[in-house]
Length: 155
Image 1: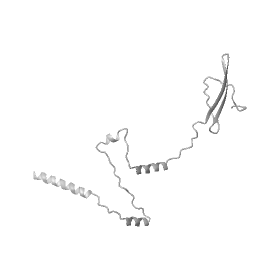
Image 2: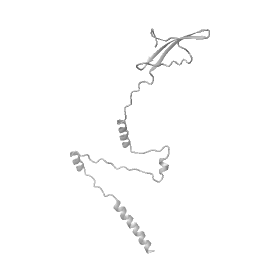
Image 3: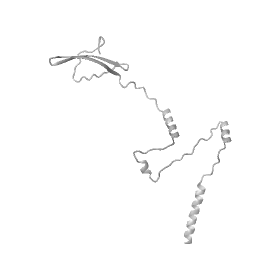
Image 4: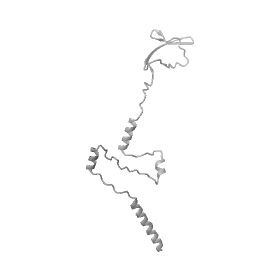
């Protein structure tokens, strides 16, 4: 029985000594005069802040394997990350307008001749980009017999 008490006491003392030795040494608080002296010498004062990270080690799968999981960080740190990401983002190329042309007006008249319907239409098309344009008219099975741009034949 005495050997068990001795062993138990030895283990407890060993653990207490180990935890006491493992504690970090107390750091001296830097006095304002020392901070001012560093600033005058051109050295940056230490701006490292203590950060606490909470890890739910007991319920780790339940916390991090959910669809709505997340990472929590201080707003200041989020703002720094956000600003750095926006500063380093690649510039978006100018894509231009979503459409290159737009039919803005249609005036039409139709005439039926036997089995054929002839439609004459005057379209006003606004061009939104430079160069050649393809303008879908969506006429299904209809045929175009002639097309003019102003007084000239369309090509």
